[in-house]
Image (cartoon, rainbow, N blue to C red; front, side, top):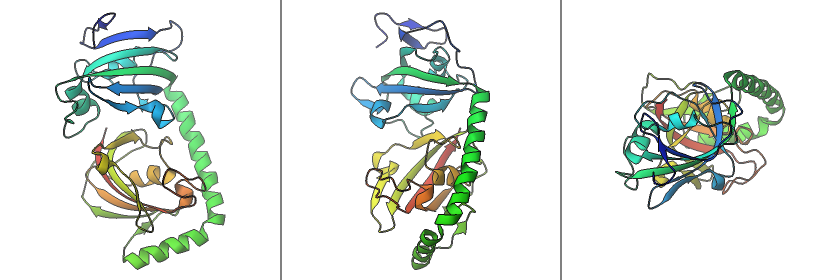
Length: 275
């Protein structure tokens, strides 16, 4: 890492371009970027967007520390590929905002191989948000016609558990389990959370706690299921909620891993941070 062919910026970020163009727009603070990434320590690979099956999306943020990867984002145009070498402690503490640095990264260099898929300007992001809002309105109108039977079953399930829940216009059911935060989750902000997801029969299908790695995403731009985008927006940093998400706010008729088609989903989510 950081050997032959690598250069170093004035701030200390090591980099090497694999493919680089001189046309196209360089990302600016506040833009949205879509990219593929493979992240490795000398011993292991811990992020691979190619396995995830789709590029990641992140807002472009101002570099905040020496050797910050955000500086690297601002060097890449759409279609560019590059390798960056960063300090593992700084990456997990400052970029990922984790309370503890994983053992596999402590004191080690991390190699990040990026392919910039596309750079979206602030105006393009706003247009996407507006399109999503219009699509959301259409979805709500369709939901009103098809959701009554499922929601009746959901409410029967909630009553059997003795839960006291709040309801939104979309049909999301939620309840606060613990915490009293002051920093609200907002659209276009990066949120960091731990979660456990189960079906109504109690079967667990996913948990960030089991993996030991919090999940982070940009709120309100469609990176997660609609029930998550809506539910997380009701939370504040430090709070823990339970969401009961009807299938039309989840994966609908499409199976997803261990989730059967048309499944109501129950999530317990703790909001660790809002960036």
